[in-house]
Length: 232
Image (cartoon, rainbow, N blue to C red; front, side, top):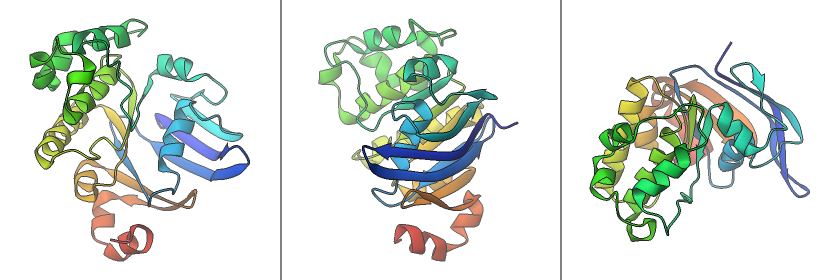
């Protein structure tokens, strides 16, 4: 049994059919990337896994337990965390308050020092309000808030978007450290080089359908597939 098993997922925005029978699996301690053009359905897939978007049909099983139909806070309590593209930190709270608040309802949680060890910059900025942080610091905080809940699986939606290359490098290193420590990750990201360096396996989604599945190494060796579905 895979840690995450997704079958026949169909999701809509109003009357618009966005995901068509999406299926994927994620093993324990694996990093899986979801690639595709803008509007292909990547973020909708993550939101459907998390219960932010309610699938009309299909199955999402986490550790063999069905998640479809549960509210997103119940999915979070079961061990899944989504780091939204827009980060959604509390701007009026400082770094440490954001982290402590995120951990309050967690069945298990990381100590603060473990988050600070992962992101030393957050420790330096722990008394700074969310609105006073740079984009990269806000992204570190958004990921730290997810990690403090000791999740079984983390969903990262465009974590490197719009950030300076040096910050992207630091975040990629942090994700690599997490992966090496056994953290299961599903990654949606436009930065192809960073994604293929991190991922074990890759799914490509095209117009709401899963169009390709392979290991990251196989995909790197097949540039024609990247060109066909991603235009690179």
